Image (cartoon, rainbow, N blue to C red; front, side):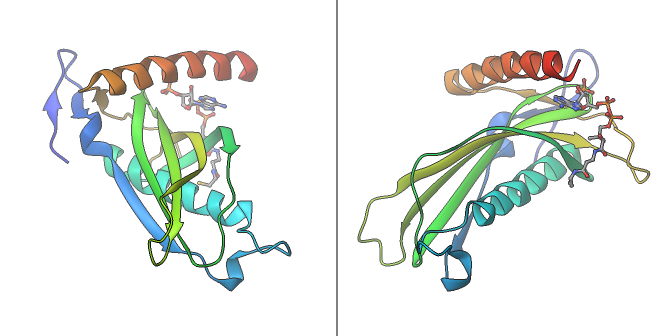
Length: 164
Ligand SMILES: CC(C)(COP(=O)(O)OP(=O)(O)OC[C@H]1O[C@@H](n2cnc3c(N)ncnc32)[C@H](O)[C@@H]1OP(=O)(O)O)[C@@H](O)C(=O)NCCC(=O)NCCS
């Protein structure tokens, strides 16, 4: 992940550099009594991915502070390959919003990928004692990244209002 320095002297990382996708094949141990994949299995994958993305971005440990707007829009099944993609949408002083999108396709690629779930997670970079520590700035590089950045700012304002 290459870094530049912003006018404020804080390191700055392009949104595109923060992206990561991980994939996992869904097996019999992942499904519920209806034969569809447990929401918890997908949530664990989302949380794991957000942890890696935020740790790479902030060069150290990061914890999940808040998860919101998790929307399950389709079910995944045994034999599906689930692909979770994430990026840092916005970064503040010590926290980051990581956006995650999950798609599923069949192991033999007989079906086009289906959107399964999306989520936004607030991750906080922490030091060895678990105290919040500073994070780099994130620089949107495309109109889509800029739109996600602005939307993340609005979601943060709503979260902080709820927290207060
Ligand atoms: C997350 C944690 C480190 C925050 O500690 P804290 O003392 O409340 O820290 P602060 O109040 O200074 O907040 C730190 C940052 O998180 C943000 N934040 C904390 N809670 C938030 C929430 N509910 N919504 C949005 N942002 C939040 C703050 O706005 C601040 O961001 P900024 O520095 O970019 O402005 C602490 O609550 C914690 O350790 N929680 C447990 C985490 C955990 O175990 N997760 C599960 C396993 S990874």
